[in-house]
Length: 155
Image (cartoon, rainbow, N blue to C red; front, side):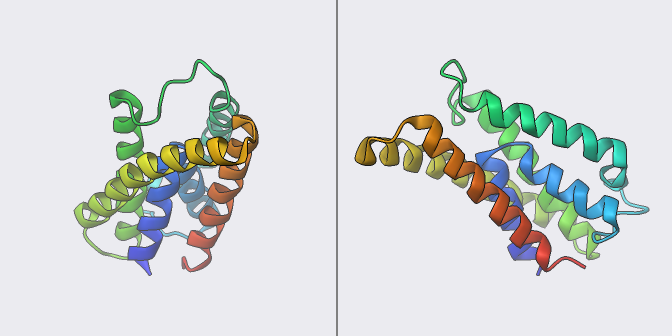
């Protein structure tokens, strides 16, 4: 299960950079993801979980603002890749597997989803005539559903 979990959580990190870490932190704080005695144990802290949720909410609002830079510009893309790597590594380590493989899968999924999500969002706005924020809310729903689905198989 760790490959699909790392890919799913990495992908949503490419769409909303803090979503993957927030979902992993949620699972770890509930005891569904065993990160105790690992370098990722901090993700199981209820305070870290709350902070990630608050930052994720800020990201959800900021994503809809016209001044927000493209997710595929260098710095945002690097942040998404790092976020994907973090969640991929954490998922793999929780199952006693190599962090480096999980990190590679998670970061690759984040980068691919970042580019694909940006292009699909622009095409959807162009083809449907819907306002960008409406399409962005649909993207938020996808992030939520994929995040929840990725955690369903954890434990």
